[in-house]
Amino acid sequence: RTPLSFAAVDLGASSGRVMVGTAGPGVLELREAHRFPNRPVRAGGTLYWDVLGLYRGVLDGLRKAGRAAPRGRLASVGVDSWAVDHGLLDASGALLGNPVHYRDGRTAGAAERAAAVLPPEELYAATGLQYQPFNTLHQLVAARGTPALEAARRLLLIPDLISYWLTGEAGTELTNASTTQLVDPRTGDWARPVAKAFGVDLSLFPPLRRPGDPAGELLGEVLEECGLDGPVPVTAVGSHDTASAVAGVPAESGRAFAYIATGTWSLAGVELEAPVLTEESRAANFTNELGVDGTVRYLRNIMGLWLLQECLRSWEAEGLAPELEALLREAAKAPALRSVVDAGDPAFLAPGRMPARIAEACRRTGQPVPRDPAETVRCVLDSLALAHRRAVADAQRLSGREVEVVHIVGGGARNELLCRLTADACGLPVVAGPAEAAAFGNVLVQARAAGAVRGDLAALRSLLRATRPLRHHEPMGDQAAWRRAEAAVCG
Ligand code: ADP
Ligand code: LRH
Image 1: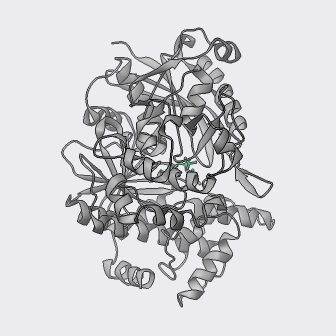
Image 2: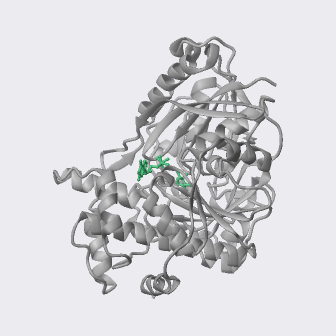
Image 3: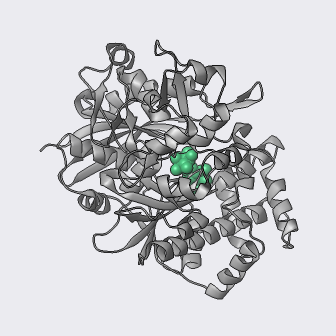
């Protein structure tokens, strides 16, 4: 088994990247071939993804990946992206309009309309998905009766859409399908009674496939455009970026762990063999998404570094143009836990005016208002660490699984202050890295399918652990201060 090279297409909400991973027995390397910004566009009052711009980035990335791979050979390609969003295709396979962004306001009121069809308790018992205004089901409820949905003959989740354009073959990858609220996490199949209750036509979705399944070959036009020699297979990976990121957690065998995938979102929880569908779990807004190798990702969505990204965007628009590293240095010196906001609050979902919205939340809860950008950043990071603490504690309590260590992966693993605060808040050791866990998880699943590496998730993770530099943070400080902050947020 000689090492082989794979292209991992990983589309995050803030940037897309194409990485080249080389994997074999005892070998795992990852190089960035191409990174491009993911900038949503508001047009005619709707917030869209620029999906063709992203596909352009994928093609440019595959061309560069081919050049970066040893002997120019890619053993396969895998695609993952953010969840829930989708493109609608007509009977000829043409895209019916740009995919709408999950932060668009069209889903306002959809959850209430959905609750009138099926009580939230029943919906949770059947799908195990936490309430999110933007779950695909809510988007479909919001889109009911629109000409695009009426004309649609196929619905492809974003990574499935990219794979379809690359190969001409359509499928629905299961880990991402589990974020639609139309999948039963106990069976890993469609929740047909739920679809029926909502009048969702499941034949819109092409057949389910699982991570590791073949997903076609790059079309001739793609090979030509990217300067690649065929055939180049495409392999289904954990196409939900969070599923790939959790597969890419460098956990140590036998040491119970929680994970926090921190990028635009923080996804914090534990990996289970079976879903937790209790009423208590629903009330705590924990989700049961499906992971690689039949695992369940039992986690909570936390606003994540979106809060920081949006603050930076506001300050830039005001002409302040602060630099992230300098801000983080200043934030580290700012007073700790001076004010905290609820980083799980969907009130922070929409874009715009983030520093002002954070200030308003502090004022509303009777806490000091941050006085400058450094204090605002400190408030965001303290608030995220606090939300991480609550999610890690709740995940353990609700699943009955005690953890010894918290792994932080994703772009936030590069933020030392956030990792340190999370260790302090959780009162647990934190292992930080890799930042590109989703790409690693994507590559490892492809490598196993191609026979370049062998074993279960634990074996894939030990390869990761053995080959990556990781940073360790021991918890310090005062748990009482975090408890007080928790009371300020939870009331
Ligand atoms: P997504 O996949 O959702 O687009 P990423 O996992 O790429 O997000 O994470 C992006 C975030 O990671 C950025 O918004 C930033 O806050 C953080 N980040 C990236 N690089 C650094 C760095 N060098 N120092 C601190 N934070 C960083
Ligand atoms: C992270 C993510 C998350 C979803 C959200 C829509 O990128 O996939 O897991 O909840 O985007």
